[in-house]
Image (cartoon, rainbow, N blue to C red; front, side, top):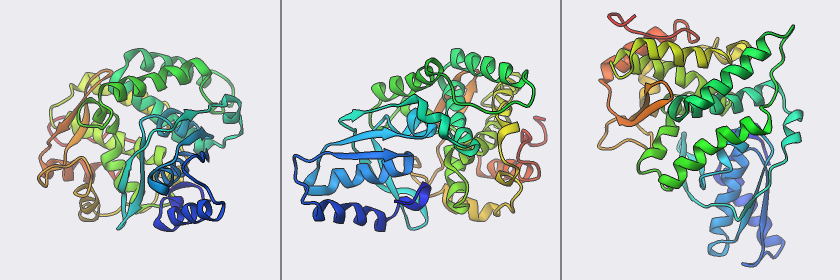
Length: 311
């Protein structure tokens, strides 16, 4: 199977289902899905659909998959140019983690995973924020720092944030939505830039949405500065190609934002930080303000975008 978003298609789903048929799998068979988050998505969907459902086992091989996709049961493919527009919930029967595999990952794959780890701290855990600061502080004090995977303790600390939120809200009708911080804008960017990895898209989305939260008066400026500092820890390791490409117009971005699955009644519902290690969901922001913040942000995507009056 192809890696990344290219795997999340009807063709890929049919390919897996055809293979299961050819191999004469039955309802007692188990589908082993070894790979990153995108393969987990399409593999879990295939397992749910084949003969009305067979069990599957998740073996995540990327940091992003380990900290995000392996827990929560979400699986989806992209349809109609919209990310994750067709999907369902299907928890794996088992998860197999092999931490040493993370040592084989390149920088972009590590950045993708670290972006989600940082997000988990920003929305729900000051303790995790401190752990992340300690890691990057130590890393940046070394000569010629090279991004590395988190140790097992830090990985489990980040994963526990998602486990706790999923336990409270398995089908994302309430507090689990906090994990969507950065994803409303991030998913739009990811759909419009197929080469942009999920974690890097979410990282950019968090910078934009952080500026949006402060500009809308939902987050105090001093708290926003602390959150922004957490996001900027990752900046030295993000490839410049991630944020130097031509940015789509607001009109094009808005078409994708309006298709976000969290929306209700034609309104964009944002998950935004409201404190340090604290976020809220289903927040409505004036669309004109969202556009203003976007226009400021694309001039310098690494800077904190605040509209006039809050800068």
